[in-house]
Image (cartoon, rainbow, N blue to C red; front, side, top):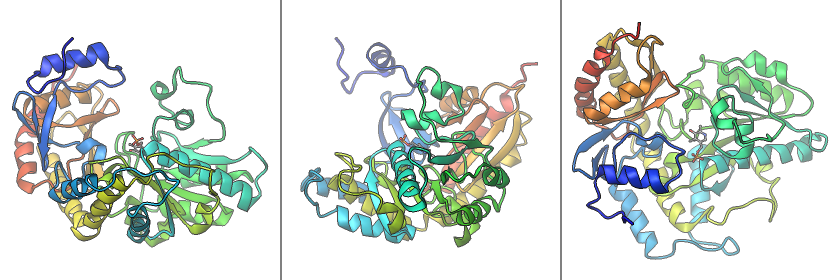
Length: 413
Ligand SMILES: *Cc1c(COP(=O)(O)O)cnc(C)c1O
């Protein structure tokens, strides 16, 4: 049996995954061995510019010195403690994430899906205890086209057939409304509504940016109906869209009651996610109600503290705005006939391909051959989300290759 040693080349790795791995992904045929900044090197020694950043988990790029130093230091001290005891990283992490986000309390988990599950549990219990909703009747209004992760409850309110099919029975209690339509949210309110739970920009659905005023309108509706407003900022948060959090694009008037964070929260080094909220909402959790063995572990917290420090002090919001504007204008300047629309905010950019042209994956394969890694979001959208530390010269280098590939596409008609 083959073992995955360093000199195993691409085809051997693909075969190992084919033979021994689950087939729940369809990755591009590149096997990454190392990464630095926005660049990775594969097992053949080829270099690629990463324009996906692990779906925004790698906002700081690969092997960031400060993150690696923090991880190494903490590795040599203590990595995991039982939540039956305290550790000296969790308390400071809680304070720092509250300062970063402007919320009063934080609950750490590991994956983004777990943060969303936590928010759902919090909202339901808040509804029963604080709002007086009848037992087991709580409703959380979600948006069509949502993506909040892969657990059985979360896929219960997905509108993507592939995410759901074969995994029933589904968890009830999640009425769905069209994304971007605040009046539909208001119309869906009942006495049992405990929360409205949406992404401020739907990333997985193809970088769908709602009209300005949508988030503020949701805020007003939730306040009026005494319902929690919860934003899933797992992909859009931490400077990805040019603001620290995407909802801040509409100002403090759009502030939610709670927010889910993940992905870049662990600096691309370790998984750590969180729900931040008011003290009132968080205090529905009592000892034993909820938890996670690895949630709040000192290794993840130590790295996350450095990641949050960089979010606060390194000007990544401004950088995301500037680089995003530059990238977008260069994409627009190509004038490729295959492109239907270029949209997004900051360094979260979607290029929608017209239906009569090849699927987005076809373009991603072309880009890969030119040394650029990115991914389709839905069949017809190419998603560009490079690390926020990407250099302007890297974007220009990429555009010299992206432009001809975009222009080379032929219609299927
Ligand atoms: C990635 C993502 C999740 C799920 O995070 P996992 O860490 O993969 O569980 C949830 N919500 C949004 C908006 C995401 O982009």
